[in-house]
Image (cartoon, rainbow, N blue to C red):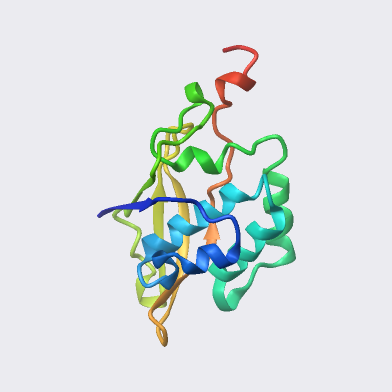
Length: 166
């Protein structure tokens, strides 16, 4: 199954994120899309991005380890989250098309842990050969999907402007 989520604008803070219809978190692809949007804010406003990620983590919260991991992954690579939006490639320095469109998919194993409340979705990056995973957990009492773990910040190809061998 493949989902397309279109965001007209990217939120710059928690209040803007919570005002978006996707912030209901009633569909797993909404949580995945908002996670990428929040990560895209990190290079310009770390605190706002962490507040958004805290919201998306729900009852689990954002741990000190999570914050350190994110900070570590962003050293000299602020372009990685942008690479998930349609149109963002190394050739155009990962500048996405607008409106911001994300294609999020399931594979045959995505629902292996669904009975335990987990769903694994996959998002293609314009700078990687394989899709990256984002694992979500549902809260049955509210029907919401929350971020459990993400593998979205793995290294990708450098933008042409930053590649001395391009």
